[in-house]
Image 1 (tube, rainbow, N blue to C red):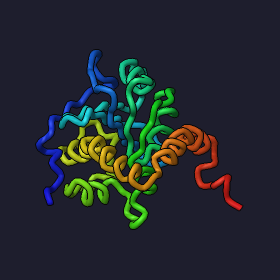
Image 2 (tube, rainbow, N blue to C red):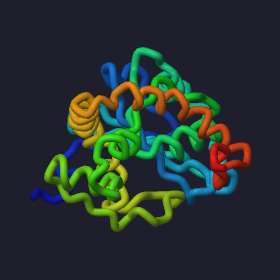
Image 3 (spheres, helix red, strand yellow):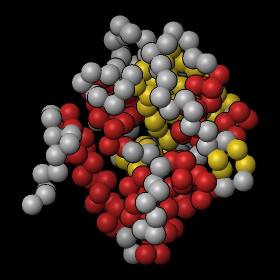
Length: 212
C-alpha cells in the first residue's frame, strides 16, 4: 500500500478564481473546504479541482471576498463537464450558498460507494482509496483553519488529495454498479441531489422528509 502520493502531484493555488482557459476535459473532480459544516454560518474558503491527471488546482477565498469567480462558476455550470464529488450533498450546497451557482451534472463517489459496496459501512474517501486504489490518505488536516491567510504544506497536500483520485474511484465504482445492476438507481440519486442540498440550505438538514 502506498501512502498518499499528493506530495508527488502538481498543485497550483489561485486567488479567487481559476485562470481563463484551463481545460479539465469532460469531467472535473471538485471538493470544498469551509470554516465548518454549517453552510449558513461557516464560509467557503477553498474549492479544489482536478482533471484526474495528477494536477490539483486550489482556489482560495479570503474573508470579505465577493466570490465573483467568473471562470470557476462557468466551469461548475458547464453541462458538458461532469463534476465529480465525494459527499456532493455538502459541496453543492456550500457552492450554491457562496458562489450562487448550481453544479450540473453531478457524480458523487460516496453515494456510488453506498450503492455498490453494501458489504461495508466504510464509505469515506479514505476507505475507498485504501480498498480500491491501495492508497492510504493522510487525514490529519481534516479539521483545521481553512480561513488562514496562508496554508501549511500539510493543508495543501490534504486539500489536493481530496480531488486527485476521484476519477479513478468513479471508474471502479461504475463497474461495480453495472455488475450489480444498480447504475440506473445511481443516476436517480444524482438527479435528486440538488433538491437534497436545497432542503439542507432551507432548514431540513437533519430531517428526513420521507421518514414515517
